[in-house]
Amino acid sequence: MSGATIHWTALAVFVFFFALVTVLGFVATRWQRGAAAPAQHLDEWGLGGRRFGGWITWFLVGGDFYTAYTVIAVPALVYAVGAYGFFALPYTIVVYPIVFAIMPRLWQAARKAGHVTAADVVYGHYGSRTLELAVALTGVIATMPYIALQLVGMQVVIQALGLQGELPLALAFVILALYTYSAGLRAPALIAFVKDLMIYIVVLAAVVLVPAKLGGYAAVFQAADSAFAAKGGSTGLLLEPAQMLPYATLALGSALAAFMYPHTLTGIFAAKSANTIRKNAVFLPAYTLLLGLIALLGYMAYAAHLSIKTPNDVVPALFATLFPEWFSGFAFAAIAIGALVPAAVMSIGAANLFTRNFWKAYVNPEVTPEGQAKVAKLASLVVKLGALVFILFVPTQFALYLQLLGGVWIVQTFPAVVCGLFYKGLRAPALLTGWAVGMLAGTALAFADGIKPVHAFVLGGHSFAVYTGLFALLLNFVAVLAVQALLSVGHHETPHAHA
Image 1 (cartoon, helix red, strand yellow):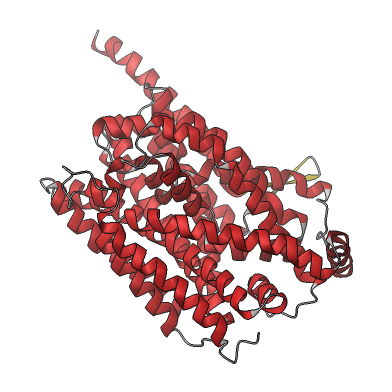
Image 2: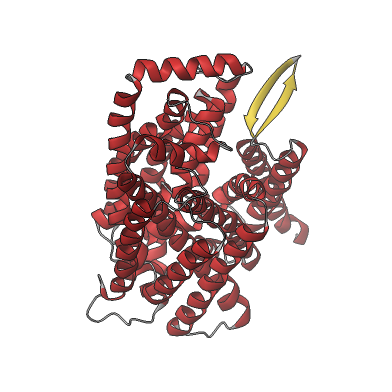
């Protein structure tokens, strides 16, 4: 399929499935609603009434985590750099024990006090408006480029259908904005069922049929190996020794950051019990298997001898070249719908933060739950509009840079959000200092490296490359402990001063 002509069969299939999820989005307004629940409360709109059971939570958190951009970007990264691109696999395996250990406690703290956001929980623990604001602001800033990148995923498949210009993307986003406004979190939760089922069908078909058409997996790996050998550098089917430390730290740092994002936490807070979250942590690794299969599409592109402009075109070009038009349309619809679910949850997560931790904290402390829901609905529209404007007028590379920075930033909220769940003695000034040190150090290192996710340190003549976010988090913890120790000394010395 070339981008110049419209592929009507694929487009018809795409439009059918897009229309189906649009209808589901509006139907979701009445879905899973309790009889006595006030429809206009923020708890109802922003957290689905906190009544999502195991299945819904599984699809919602999975749909949130494995986004359209994942389906486009992971194979693109594997295509570009080889084995290094597979860091997403250990990251999504390491993340679930973290979820199992931490998230049920966070859920209990939120449920008990009626908290809607991580910043609410932080304020509940420490009583510091400044620390609450720091966590909320980091969440909103880190989420915006993430929403923009979902649009990149959608834009890639819309162009692969032969549709040019910005109108189709804007139209898709208007539809998303309308049903999110009316149904809140229930819309992406219901659509996640369809989206995940479609993605599973597409990926399983691809990993069976594509190698069969290309001469088997041996031929796929051989073609990729030859292509990487011709490229030279540090690309290849196996990691170079120098890549192992950055690979491991990138995986660990990403795992610590993943459930600090407002959208993943929104899925957690919407669960009906702590046990629901534990069960999900056990079963969610099924998605990691899927992600590994998705990543292999990057190698298949070499065996298919695709000619593409950018690595982001790998997946659409692969489907367009090797599958009939109707299946390409189905695959592109799955990827586009895979943008809608996380984009909706991300905008809801950011809107919840704005409403609870800016509006309620500083503008109108007496705002009712109904008033909060109204503010959040409008804020979610503004967030989505901001992401759309961003993607239409700012180069895609900039969105990617900002999203990498977003990961470095969001992981700096980890001490404030998590430590209070296990240890009550930490003080707000210590956590605030740690956050500031981590943010400044992480941002400075990232800019010094030209917004690359890893930084190389030279020790004793040896160079060690480490994920910038993880190093900044280490500095964050050191600063927290140092200030905490100073505060403790000051606290113990005060009585003597009076004596």
